[in-house]
Length: 228
Image 1 (cartoon, rainbow, N blue to C red):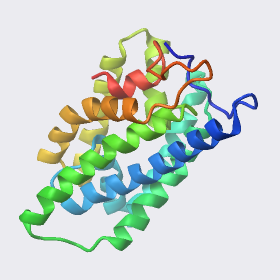
Image 2 (cartoon, one colour):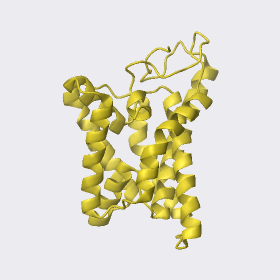
Image 3 (cartoon, rainbow, N blue to C red):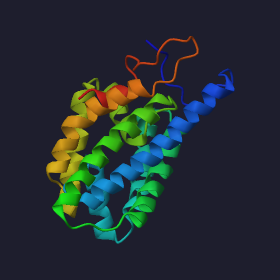
Image 4 (cartoon, rainbow, N blue to C red):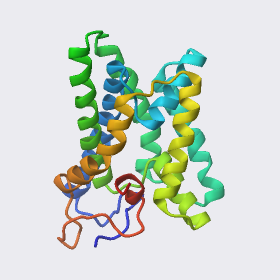
């Protein structure tokens, strides 16, 4: 097993490996935002937090990307009582994903045909899995939402699966009541994102300093994302 995720760049890491990890981090976060935007454009159901973001965006008149940033920052504040420590990846997640969502929505034209929306949905889910594998493999700390689940797990002693399920049900329910889109895409995302992210994590794994392959460490935040 690899060492736990490093929240900050290690000065002892060779420059080439550090650069590769940083590329994985920011490419992964940007693609994650782009994938969320594709799900929005498909209009067939969003990922759990996307449902909440869209509902809040519809109610407030603020763009969904900006809402994502504010929600991420608010969730990060919840880390304080949970005694979670944010890393470079955590803080970057708050801003990069939201900016990428709005940028992608500005570039992708609105589609109405189901023949286009279905492939867009599938592309969004696949891209989301690849993006998740990329930014997890960077090992710069979990995103604020994933850290919330692991923090609740540690503080309550309840399983990660239970904490994730409880949080996501609450998020989806709230987002739906606010007008967020829940549909077949939401279900398809829920059953496929774990295996997809696990596969792409292996594809994009950055070798650890010892030369061993990078895998998910026991008790690490990645379990909240990959084990469903």
